[in-house]
Image (cartoon, rainbow, N blue to C red; front, side, top):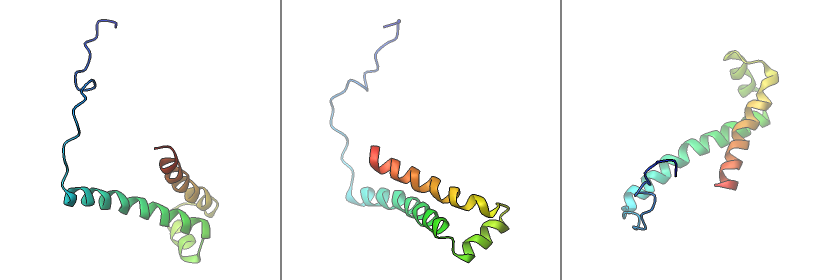
Length: 84
């Protein structure tokens, strides 16, 4: 054990504390909003409407990086849903 003390919290079989429905739904909404934004942003970068291209170039990115900028959040979102 290399002289380390075991963590009693990790060995506990105690049930998780009860959470109110209001708090549960608040957490779900707070989690869903950024996820939906990233999904929308990624899809818009894949579709590449003129407004998205114009604004991305105005922010200082070249037009050639718009597609990778759309793929990354979608891939991360897919990975999160798939493996977690």
